[in-house]
Image (cartoon, rainbow, N blue to C red; front, side, top):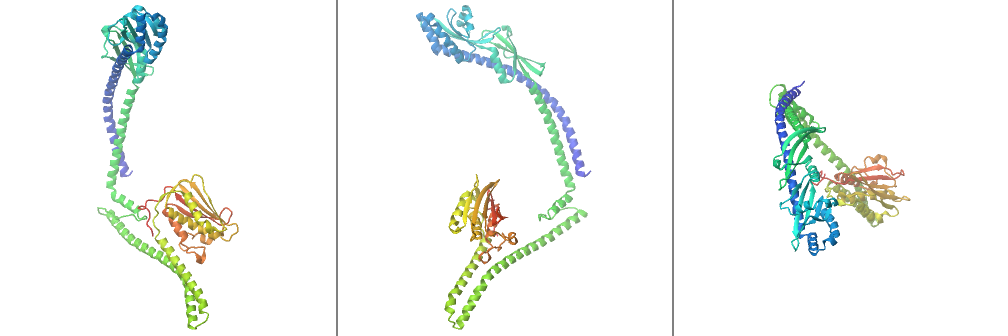
Length: 571
């Protein structure tokens, strides 16, 4: 086993064992604290429930008090009582009590007058209450709510108001304790059980007792709560909470300890790695830089030491220097060869027009020297030939300049279909008998592109297609658009004379042309370069589906070319 793996394993084991030992001690301490915190939380839940019941009772008392002081129902009963019409109107008040109970969100509501006479009650079972109990509740001097103990324990709230003749009219409302505790238990994610009345001497809402019991679903933490009203009545109940949360927290502690052990082992592995790296760094640097030699990114080594490693580093540096010199020479030779080829092709293209120019001028001189009467007749033809060939030379130079100094694309958001329609429109007149059509695709998205340069590419392709189909019966040129993933494809299809196989592979090279003397051979080269600078592609796909003509495809990415600062420089 090599040095680096041995160091990594040793440091990793030491770190993991030491972290596990320390983690066990920490886990024991955290478990005790977490258990104590959980029990305090259960006790706090008991206190919160008692406080919430008190708050609900006070809210009910305040709600009924407002109904007595400003409510229309109590006033109407007082007026009927004073006028002696209560017996006649009693049945009219009973349905109102049902609606008031619903509005107050109470479990029970009773409307009564002094003496315990019940005017209306909801539910109807309350009509069976004794007059003495009702009269006692109406005349009770206890402020706030009272507790009703027994099988149907409830929080009682009451309010009264005297009529103009001093007779007492009041509302008595009740909220069942069991439903209230059940709602609070769901909110606080606990269980409430064993609600029962207690003697007043045992009342204490601030000192819950805590125990832990077990059930079929696991451990339950228990706290006994005591709820007391202002009259001394007391209701006790138990709050139970599953210890699952505590167990989950302890598992989280275990995970944290394990994670710490893993991190420590990882740190040890990293430390061992760097230690081994420092011991074998000279060889590692040499191997890394040797891998960069092919790409030309290798740099001289800065290796300290002696012996064979130092000699190897020195030899490597010398090889890099020699290789750098060789690459510079090759690059210079390649550039010279490239420009020689360009110069040869430009000279060849310019030399062709010079031959007819020279012949025309020599003929003119010869006719002039002999005072030949044909001089005037030939002069017009010769000068026309000279001008045409000079124009051809100018065109060659202009196209070469455009190829050499093509500007960087300036992308903008453009609709491809609009560009194609524009190109078709400007070539419609020149198409003549050739059918120039556009077949747009469905849902073709916009692209980021230089509008003028894309028009230049399509103009070149369409002009070439029109030239290839001119004079052919039924000649047709079709432009199509379609969406292909993250690209938009534009196709130019014609049924013309087609492209010879021997030139198909050189279509996009400068000065490769199928038009003979009438073409410069730079149009497709410029179009190809525009496509590449848009991060796209211009390609010749071969004959059309009918086996005639040719198919060209321009692919443009939807996101467009790179920013100008990142784009490759012009030639």
